Image (cartoon, rainbow, N blue to C red; front, side, top):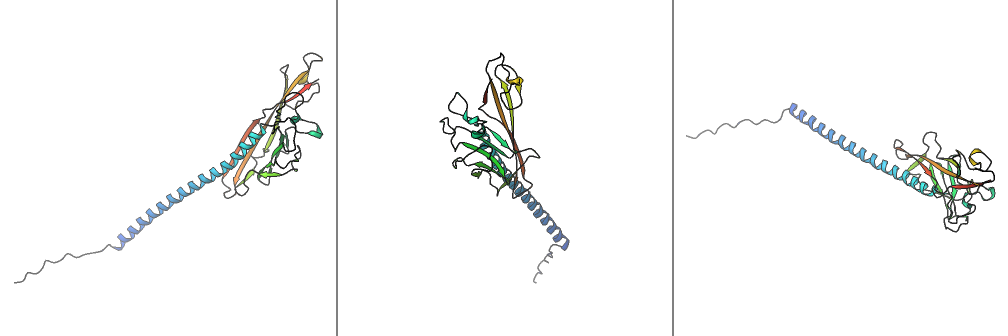
Length: 246
């Protein structure tokens, strides 16, 4: 007599509710992964933009600091320094105009004479920091509109602006009497004031004029207006201006 095979157990699939729960869990995992990716990508983009802005501003600042420190340098000592002249016809002294332009001269070739390519400067025009082209010649101080100027920041990457209402360049003076402790927060000009009075009548006194240029920059990325950075630095000019009185 033939045996009847054992009855096979019934097979059943997942229910609709189980399927929906699985889909919801899968969607939650995908959403979490996408959010993590977007956050990471955004953080990476912000880091790149911050580095790009920092490089633009810091490079411009370092160049300006190095150059401005040299203002008034002359390789030939003694006598009147022609690179600190206040004479109108041969004006070469460190000057800030309108808070947006700084100009100066120094003895680049070390011959002691002021050449036409030894007038330097920096200015901000339409959100771009520019440097006077020293190779173009025809330099002159207190004439920021003259000469050839070259950009040192990329206007397509960053816009240079002000730190609040602070000018880009601020020039300050300190006049020191070399024979006394008299000082004056201003330019050294012989005129009989307390700080340039001789110890003894008829005795010559050297007035030492120290100068500091405060540089204030703010930068904003063209591609991301939220990305903004500010830099400020005070530059003490190494070469003091000497005025002998009386």
